[in-house]
Amino acid sequence: MSLDAEWYELMWKGEKTHEFRRRFLTDTPVQWFVYLTAPASRLCAVIDLDTAIAGTPEQLAEIAERMRPGNGASVRSYLARDGRELGYAMPIRRIREFKGFAAEDLKQMVVGFHPPQGYTLADRHPDWKAVCDKFVSTSCVREATVESPPL
Image 1 (cartoon, rainbow, N blue to C red):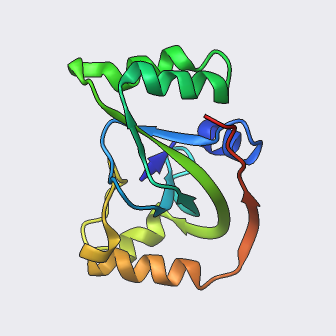
Image 2: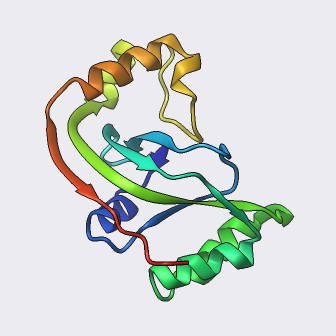
């Protein structure tokens, strides 16, 4: 999945403890391979996400507000776009940053590469699976465990 560098850095500061999405996998923790959007344009980290919490935009906005005061309104607006009544908050458990792969590298490794717009299930795409396996076989640059505030 893609992520703006601004939100990525807030994770490292401990100010972003949940990732909010309008659609997501349910009933299972996942590993998120993070592609930072332009201008960084690179695959840079693996984030362990706990099982998604499903809720209304209002319920999830309360989590966002507790996580980072002033953030609830923007999360509510994002989740409720197009009349949606359900969204997801994934607790962030661990972040591992790697040297990563720039967009130009990924173009050589993944047929038809374009920056991710949503999420891709790597196990269903052999090129992406190979990229992810190679990615995590390199040295970790930095790592952190994230403590979420109680809900």
